[in-house]
Figure 1 (cartoon, helix red, strand yellow):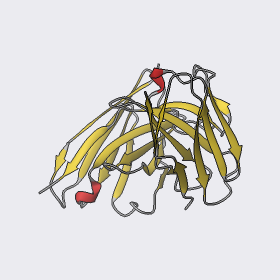
Figure 2 (cartoon, rainbow over the protein chains, first blue to last red):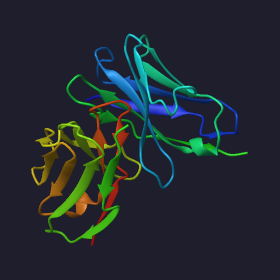
Figure 3 (cartoon, rainbow over the protein chains, first blue to last red):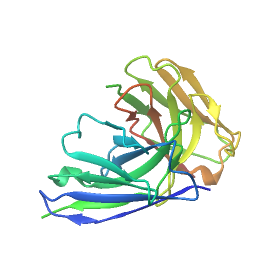
Length: 117
Length: 107
């Protein structure tokens, strides 16, 4: 059964770059789209963007200028970098898998990122 | 961008109750809506796809309905284990967007 394991720095200062990784275990990496989603405290979920195994991406325009999603197919991992963070980027960040017929069918447990000076 | 308005934000139910959670889209999105269940510290679970299709392995007390702009998640004969946060997702157009979520408490 496929599992998504996430990790990354949990505490950042304003203007730093957020960096998270999501590893895929127990399933194929190719043939899927992989998304990053976030949820600020007390707010709803926000889709950040997605990537497929060949590197094709789609981003939310609200974050496109600061977000970079990439893949390492040799490690079955995807990564998120978000530059110039502010307190507004404080959130739980999730990765999720999508197929051509099922969008976001498998999710990671989330990683909490706090931006504070 | 499609806005999803989900309601209620919070609800309380008693075991055996039937509950409905609404998700209204700001534009026609066909049946491109999924529903998820999430418990604290756990990964979200995919429960309904394409508005009405129960994901394999999900108990049949869960069901989804709707098309176009109005969608509903229904839980029949609520059990204590159904206490969770529920949210809808539209994947009809980019950017994908989510409802604000519903916290379901079981008394």
